[in-house]
Amino acid sequence: MFYEIEEIKRRRKKLGLTQKKLAELVGVSQPLIARLESGDLDPKLSLIKRIFKVLDELEGKMTAKKIMNPNVIFASPNDTAKKVIEIMWEKGISQIPVIERGKVVGTVTESAIIKRMLEKGADSLVEIKVREIMEEPLPTIPPDESLENISKMLLNSPAVLVVEGDKILGIITKHDVMKVIKG
Image 1 (cartoon, helix red, strand yellow):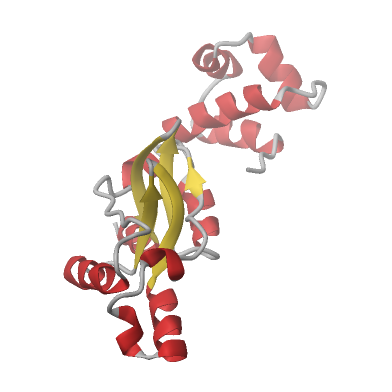
Image 2 (image 1 turned 180 degrees about the horizontal axis):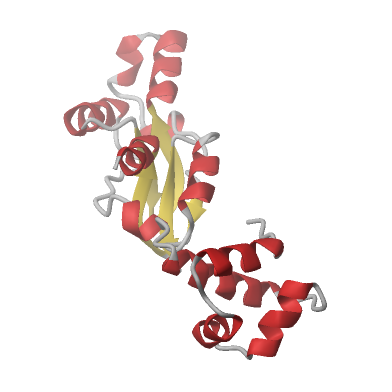
């Protein structure tokens, strides 16, 4: 995540906030906000994150928690590819995270299935185990991740998992982002 400190003043003014009000919302002093905006202070990343989180909330920015699908369908490394294909077809999804002992260990995608079919034939998908065709795990993000960062991540990944601690809260696909943009 990249934060531009110069954005703070612009966004604060756009929201019609005084330095004092922003300071109250963030839990810091007004002089600290003034020094930050004037460039006289090299702040800790944790402070910058807090400020941007407050600004994002005030602007009603979309976060991962707001756009995620909480109904994540998982596969096991021991499931057959045929079973996963049936689930993907039935649910209209193009990727499934693979879980083993509560931990994400990979992902099965339509591309991985088609690649295997081209290499070994369609019959090879009947008994082959997911562990033999799964790809790298999907990237994970916190529930407060911004729509902008999620969109950037989805340029290189079919989906992202929303995670808090060790708990998977949901999944976000390109389709979910398109729904948000569409309104």
